[in-house]
Amino acid sequence: MKDYWKNKWNERYSQEAFAYGQKPNEFLRQQLDLLSPGNILFPADGEGRNSVYAATLGWTVASFDISIEGKHKAERLASDHAVTVDYRVGELPDLAFQPGQFDVIALIYAHFPAEIKSQYHRMLGDLLRPGGTIIFEAFGKRHLEYRAQNPKVGGPRDLATLFSTEELEADFTGYEVLELAEVEVELSEGLFHNGKGSVVRFVGKKPK
Image (cartoon, rainbow, N blue to C red; front, side, top):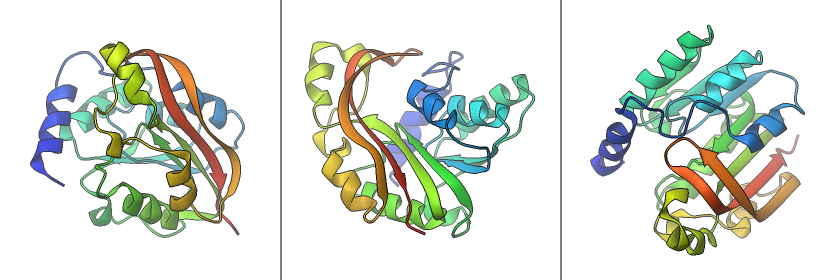
């Protein structure tokens, strides 16, 4: 992955304030309420607001990101909540997670570069046990209209990095679809997600 991405996120996460706040994403919170704790993975975990929250609920939590500054913030947040997260820094192919290791994979605003995002989704699917659950929320293709009206809502500026429901169906083919839609939401997450946006939400179960 290009140094541009590492530099971008290290710069953002090196600030004192938490870029997206310390509270978990609301859609994630709702979905975890429906599940019994097990092993969960958070790709592109950033400063750890979501992984730390899951740990407070009793989940065994692993996460990863390319940003060492994100890991430092996540470790601080985990310490504040007296929980632990197995947070690894690097690119997914190099991180030694095991096939079928996780009961849940939570992709919350995991906007990987366009050229690898579908590959990463398939690799992550291999790490999910049969019958396991994908929880996904990220900005959709319609989001550019919202961002043009209000840059404070955040999100990628390029269409290719945004998601469509068709992409999710293709990346997680064969999954039982419990929820899949692009919807308008009102975000209030730290410094960089504020206002109305358009997100794709997907909840799917891997075939047994």
